[in-house]
Length: 303
Image (tube, rainbow, N blue to C red; front, side):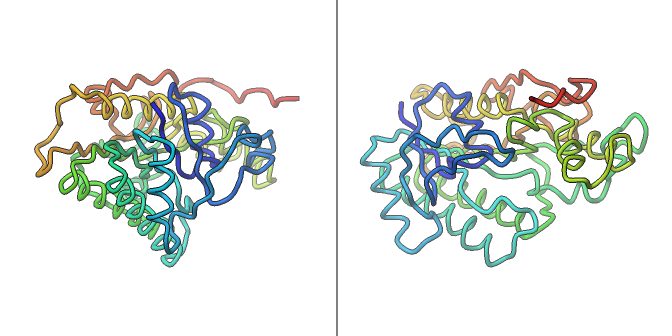
């Protein structure tokens, strides 16, 4: 089945296309660049892109046309401003309006499944309250376990915009019967930094600090909790698509129009994490292949 992938050329988008079993129509606001953010060749650079700015005036019509013209069965919606420090003006346009536009287009095009890239920052204030002890519960105060029933606690305009996107997903599940899966994604990185030492090593490469510094160790400890490997990212998205596209699947909750709404935490199998992944395991069969405990030291740089 064909899946429309919005924000296709970003870090999460390339992880999805690299590991998914589905065929994707790539949609982004610009054609693919030549390189990823880590300097490696961009895997989409020779692929066709449907160019649409999801937050623009007229985007609903363009998105609807893209879905109907390509016979799309489902949408994975990644487009938006991914910056935690983004301004309200940016997230209102790109994240809130953009998400609503995608959902409205899906409704008009008869698409019945949408996987939405939400964020761990929807509940980011739990981390703000308990960090850094939260990163290593064996050494410090044991923090909360945050699951799909925990109250949202955004830590930024960005986090609040993703919470708003989840609310619109719920609305379209209730009103239009679309199966919507909100993934509160943790830390996904480009291939060079796709490991628990990724953020710390990237900071070393920038000259921010050196290996072994306190800041380095804190960055590693956090990443061991929040890391979502690229292949686990694709596996979680596919698990949601499999569920939504299964005509025999039963809704997990009663909604007015029978649509599914689920919120899952997008992390790998990270023992120290405060985010729950058991709900995703039980509900859609998500089985992460990677763990924040591996490897025990930074991978050697690629030559």
